[in-house]
Image 1 (tube, rainbow, N blue to C red):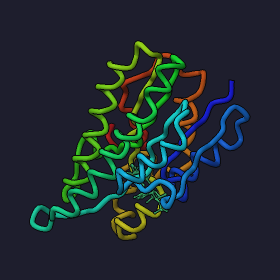
Image 2: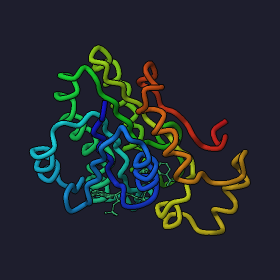
Image 3: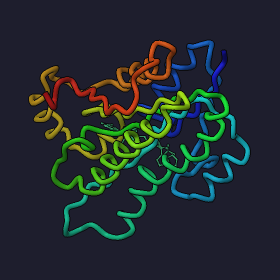
Length: 220
Ligand SMILES: NC(=O)c1ccc[n+]([C@@H]2O[C@H](COP(=O)([O-])OP(=O)(O)OC[C@H]3O[C@@H](n4cnc5c(N)ncnc54)[C@H](OP(=O)(O)O)[C@@H]3O)[C@@H](O)[C@H]2O)c1
């Protein structure tokens, strides 16, 4: 049966690869709002979007930001916007979608987390707060919603070739990091999208509550 899939942050990077990957499938109707239609920085924007779209079978919480700040530079505005976009907005989206999923006794939720949600790195305090948080949401809701056949998982990528990576890490640092990855390269967005495709497919009927690492062996 055709399923409606919401993907946030599909203009570029991993979200765009997810969109392109799922477009090839016949079984999905994709909702891919722009930031103007669904601005995760605003709870009012989220509420307005779901007053129109309220029959969603599958949610892919992909959009995210990464502000890299040392402890002496962290300010309240950065703290608030990071947690709003990476943590509160995905939770709010899930809250809007779960009532319909319960009526269907079916739902699939995938949260884009990070390896920095399992371990961390200097100056990643704000990012790690949000990604450890989304992993906690994933685990708690997997326990709460399993009885409704709503499966929820978090994907924890390592380094992926996207604008976020290019903007945050200098070319020299990227070269150094590659030498610490067993596969000696960053992931391409499509490699993350393939995992999303599996998690929401009929092939996955039993995996829920997991934080799945896809990092070329970086954390091994
Ligand atoms: N790249 C990596 O190495 C990496 C590694 C681990 C995890 N991740 C996670 O994977 C996800 C995608 O990362 P990416 O590298 O593909 O990021 P990206 O290239 O920077 O793209 C981010 C996406 O999020 C959207 N977005 C940002 N703020 C938004 C807002 N207020 N409202 C709605 N949409 C907003 C952007 O839309 P606009 O075009 O409107 O700005 C864009 O589509 C993120 O959650 C990130 O934390 C990435």
